[in-house]
Image (cartoon, rainbow, N blue to C red; front, side, top):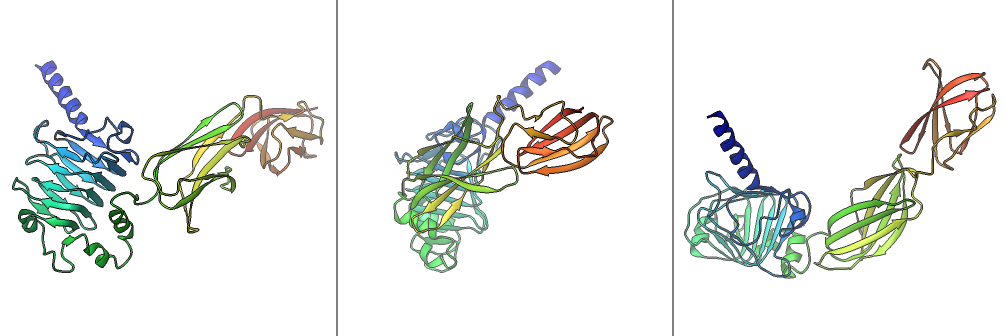
Length: 377
């Protein structure tokens, strides 16, 4: 009996997790890489829990839209939650008794929207539909204090959403009211996006930024999902202390709504920590900095040791990584710290206090640490 119960429980857990999908990066709805599991698909999307925590584009290029069906699942509730930005090219349909819709940030539909379900647009949430919103009967109530902008409302949708399209400040507004409500500039990107028919993306969207370490070089690969008025990308490199310098420049695409791949190779990376940051420069002189990634570089032919060893008293010891800032801590054989030293060259004068004997060195260089025994004869 217990085995049978555990089997049913394991099947239930596996089934439940299979119907819970969350975005893990900016990307397209149709791409498996955008989700923690496979893509939800675009037609007859079964009832499940879907959470959009990133900028996700659906139906780009095909205007295929999304259709949420009543099949699958059991129990629920099943909800599509938009915590970041969901942009859908084409018509969208939520069938009666399909998934509920919760908008906490922004959802844009380049097409018509049919709602036969429960909808919640919370404070600060925005729904923009370039076509018509059709309530078309069905079940489900509306809640929330967010704002809806649409090209038109059928009679059902007109009574479904609070307010009146002819009254300023109400939750129910027309597309033209976007400009009127843009008193603080927060809707500018949406207005430009809508005015262009969806051809101009909201911000520049960085899809991925990765590195590949070779024997002597570090390769950087990144992809943009969309660009707007961009002139070029600047590549900056920083060390373990967070000091950055410009390393290279690559021309951008200007304005595009298609994915673009970029590649840059650092032919002389720093031994140790390398921070790489992308800076996108606009045609108008403004720029946007993206979060850096960190890459550790430890070439096999660099031992990162002090020499000679043994070394004469009060002599110069050298390090096999030229340049940079070294921090050296010296201990006696019993682990007692004798002193801290720093040098900006690849050599160091041994202190006069170090007589013949065995010492332990802790060598720190650009995020790397090595421990070494040093004999003074």
